Image (cartoon, rainbow, N blue to C red):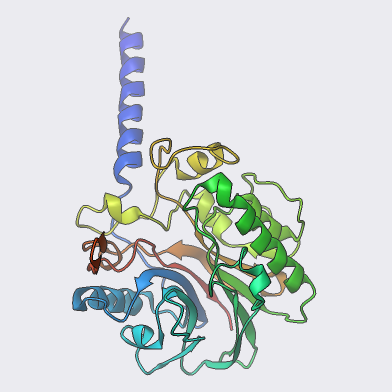
Length: 342
C-alpha cells in the first residue's frame, strides 16, 4: 500500500512539474554563448518595424542588438531604411529595396568591417506573387567578411498561416520548391538561407528546401538535407521556440523552451483546425537558419534563441478602429543566432 501511494505521489509530482514547465517555460537567466572570433549571424522578424516606433520599443530593440553582438542580422517586416536606421547605427550597412509602396520589407544589416557587395530580389516576376505576396520576394545579398570569403545570404519571409494553415500550406510549399530549384542550379558556394518560414523545421515546405525534393514530406527528423543543413532542427529537438514567448513573460529572462510545442505543430499537420481554439501550444519555432554543406565545418557551437528580458518585456501594438497604437514590445518574435568561422 505504501509503495502504491509512493508511486502515485511520484507520478503526481512529475505531472505537476511538467505542467508548470509547459505553462511557464524555464525562468532561468539567459546565457548567451560567448562570441568567438567568427561571425555571429541572426535572423529577427521585427514585427511591423515602422518609422513611428515608440522610443521605448526602439530602446528595447537597441538593447537586444547590443546583447546579441551580431555581425549580420536578417530582418523581416521593416517599413523602410529610415525605420531600420532607428535601430541600426552608422556602423551597419543595410541592404534592402526601400520601396515606399511596401510596409513589410526584407533587409540584411551588415556590421562593418564586413561589406555588402550586392543585393537583388530573386523572384521579381509578378506571376509568382501567389508564392511571394507583395514584396516578400527572397532578398539575395552577397557579403564579404574580413576574411575575404564571400557568403551569399538569402533572406525569406514566407506566407503566414493567417487564413488557415492548411489553406496557406500550398503557398509556402511552392515558395520553398521554387527557391530550392533556383539554388540547386546556383553557382553560389557558401550559402545561408534565413528568415521567418512561418512553418516548423519539420513541415513539408522547409523539408523541400532542405532536400531539394518537391515530394518531401512533413516529418519530425534531424537529418541534414541534400541541399542544406537546417540548424534550427537542433533547436526544435531541444523544444526551443522563437514566436509568442512574450505571452509567458513574468518579468525575468527566460529559457526559450516550451515543451510540447514541436509535438503540437506536428499533430496538426494536414489538419483543418481553428486557431487558437484547437491548439495546445501557441508558441512556435518559425525563424530558422539553413546553411550549405560547404559551411558545415564553419559552425561554432550550437545555434541559440535569444530570450532576454529586453526581447520579451513591454506592451504589444494594438490595431484600433482609427489605425494602430504602437507598443513597447521589441517583437513577438525572438532572434535566432549562430556563430560561423568566416
